[in-house]
Amino acid sequence: REVNISLLDARAGSPPSAGELLRRQGERQNAEALVQYLRDWETWSAQLMESHLSYPVLCYFRSQHNNQSWLAALTAVLDACALLIAYAQGALKSQAELTFAISRHAVMDLAQVMHIPPRPPRDDRLPARALAELRGLLAACRAAERGGEACEGKLVPLRGMYEPYVNGLADRLLMALPPWTTAEPVDNWRTSPWGRISAGLLSPPEPHKDEHF
Image: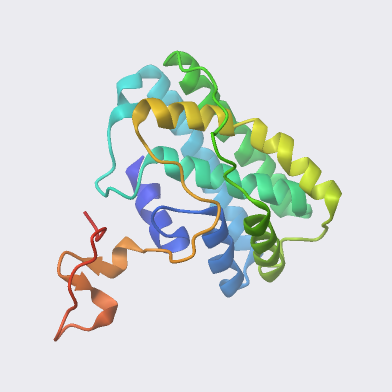
């Protein structure tokens, strides 16, 4: 379970976000790689569902870093898939639909086996300004082949299919849900207890309050 969560750090930051995943994908300009990455998460979600339904206590096990969790990773992937289903076309949309289906299945069944009723988030996780930013990121990574109110209207029911479940799980497990976008993303691989690796080795700065562990 934790391997893919750790690998997500360099691809979407920690905590991960759909926006950061799309932004970095746009920099690489490789839509085929994103299709394969979503395919890997399709398998991961199926494995998570089967193992955690068999042993629900695994849901309570934390990741090694306090800004990572299986629930945050799964939610970020669901967010990204929902965007791609609403705005993309072709192979990218098709794979997003498959990954979304099994990931949504996982959170719904886990909430059921843990007797957690779905609860809509108290605050909207995707305000209008963040959605506008995400549309730009979709265009940058050549994923947005359509737009307008029709796409936004499709995104709303997609969010309704999983957000109440991940929110209920987050409340019970005391795990924070990730944002859709991140103004200042943090990568755990860039940090150490003595400061940011990228800031220099001779005179490391004071550690940030949220550094690494």
